[in-house]
Image (cartoon, rainbow, N blue to C red; front, side):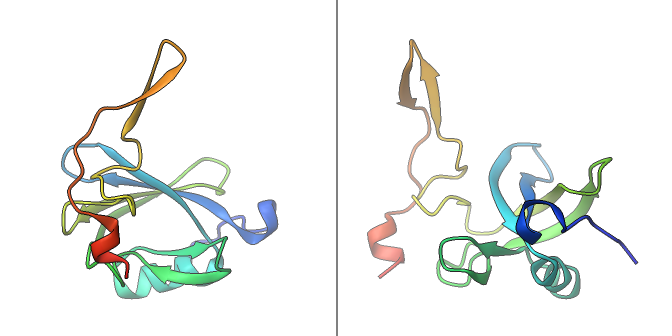
Length: 124
C-alpha cells in the first residue's frame, strides 16, 4: 500500500495534473488522504477543495473529467504527479485548457491561450 506523507500542510499534498500524451501541465490542486484513495479506486482525479472544504471529482459539474493514466510520487512522498487524459479539453474552471494560461511579460500578465468554454454557461 502506498503511504504518502499527509502530515505536512494540514493533511493536504499538492497534486499536479499533466497531460499524459503531451506532458503539458494542466493544473495544480490538493489532495487529502480520502481524495487520493477515491482517485485510486475510481480512476478519475479527485481533489480536496480548500475553499469548500470538501472532495470534488474533477469534471463533476463541467464534464471535463481527468482519467488517470499514471501516478507518480516525489522523493519525499508529499507531492503527487497525475498523468491524465483530460476529457472535454479544458482543465481550468475559467475555461482554458490549462490553468497556466497567463505568461509574465515585462512584469505584466498576458493571456496566451484561447478559452475553450464560457464558465458562466457551464457553472450555473
